[in-house]
Length: 463
Image (cartoon, rainbow, N blue to C red):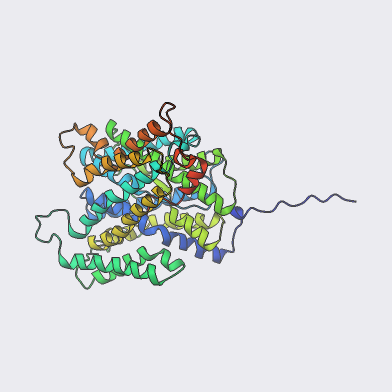
């Protein structure tokens, strides 16, 4: 009798759906994350007073890097980079405020030089970080995510009303009405529509708002006709990178937050797919995030992280193949090679972007609060950790000149609500929950167990 060896079943993660279904599901992933992805270059470019053409180039570079990193995460590069799970990556809101502060003090060469160093830092610490994630429990990540959302709401207000209160058109009623209408559309879609359409409520509101803005005379797409169809922005568009110490430190702190976010999402998608996630695999996923910092610094883009909304889409559709988001990555890459498309996005009126952004940033804040709900406060010092870290983080938000007399280099660190909140929350968590002589009898969730990280899988700084 001939022995027959059983054929190993293909993991759902490695299955390849039919071509038509593969393409449709890939487009779905792009639609779900697109608004959040392009919001980052729009906010940073506007805050740094870049012209529309330059912001368009940032949008394209953002999509190119997001596409490349998504392909790396889904398909992998040997045993070096990529988690090989159905995830989609894009620019993270975590880096927005630090990048703006660095840009205002050192210019864009300082921004991208700092990003490159933070990316190298990420590559070097990917393996160690995968083993110390317990130091970033919900009490830390929840505080930081809350601050990320709160700090960006002022950016949404600036897009809607303007940034100069003395300007004649500041707070123009037409702009306020348009932004309010977009918020209302997003609310109505979320309330009365179910399934995939509700997942793209923000993008739908953005599109409807842009169409309404045309007859209102708020749009100017004159530069689109002059923009070529195909091309890519040259590396180091803004000159040779510079490496200010304060900027480097700030962006390295940002990289730590990105790692905590991505780890949570990798664990969430692992549970959804039933795929085993070893520390080595987590490290390869984190290394891809670090590589995004290096690549983004060279190509004038932004650090990337895994998008939680796409993790949610996998849960919604039940399609666990990593080749579906790989198609999404290819689509993002192709979109990034069309400068005319980036110019259209960059030409959207401020109230349109601000209205949609207000929902995204407020959602980030709400997710941070939901994360803190998982923290045990009774019988612990976690309330003090949250109170002090959020209080310190909010200072530069409510009083932008609070650190005006602090030396410029140091101001970039303490003047960033996100960076200062991360540092304070991390140190206080060590003080109260990890140092032997001060450790309280707390629930393991509060000191960073694997269960705590899984509970924190949904929180995001990418809206």
